Image 1: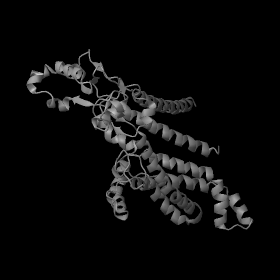
Image 2: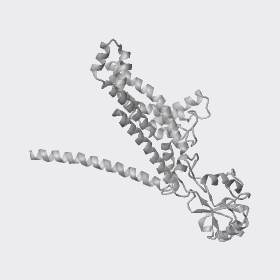
Image 3: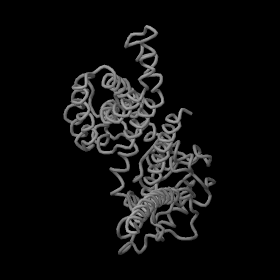
Image 4: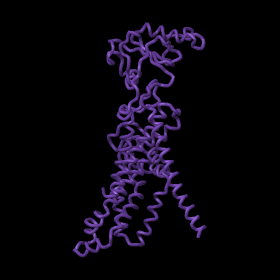
Length: 393
């Protein structure tokens, strides 16, 4: 008896310990994710080790990363457009320094570069000079760049994290691309998934149901990269030829693929919910004169509504977190989607394709972690809604 009691205590302690360890690991991961991402805020979106200086008579003292990009792309050519004097903007950097100075002027190993930069900036009222800080004299006027804020990060439309001298970190297009593809997957998967679940639970013969169910559950075990190859080889060319598109990697291709991947979850959980409807309700419906289809539409499905909705939400929640499949078929264009026939980029695809190249602790690295935090919040809300629906709240 003592040995049996001791064994039960050991098993009980193992179960409790496993639960606490799992919870602790999840908490640590979440804290790490948000800690790495939150470091982005209040940082200046400027290439590490670089500074921007202007003429002392220039009235402009602060600009945004977007305005810097427009200056270097020559969309803004006059300081008047930025609230300064009517003076033409002169961009001065290492890429065009040979336009103003010869190698002899700069000296051996750029020894005279700091002096030449100071001289050029003081002589040109419209200059904006971008150089490594070690070449910039402390007496020069530095142009301040507006720090990254949560709103500018969320509402920004441009995602160029490696742009020089100022990275563009706007994730609006990426978030909308994720939601756009997920919406398409929902429109594709929900009618098919619920229809198949009703068929398997109420219409199909036992032999057919026993044959279909293992195949549907097997579909959930196929790696996402296999789905990606399938989409790349079959779905992408099909859409390209069907709609006469220049490229077939579009939001529609991603939606169809994610819809297929979400079907096993939707079908399995919905079928379980429908089959859990009490037999007495079905018999009462038949007793009142309703036929089978009327009973399904007015009694069985409404009773299982919370379970079916929960299955649909969990299925789409799984689809949102997929990486390789959408990375291979959506085109990875960080633009705000206006049609399902355009390339888009999702959060998961962005993280997967760029994290390996991002410098640890840099702005790009922290921006990707913040994107991961946003994805976590989205999936958490989806699962929370599913839990509320399951409890019929």
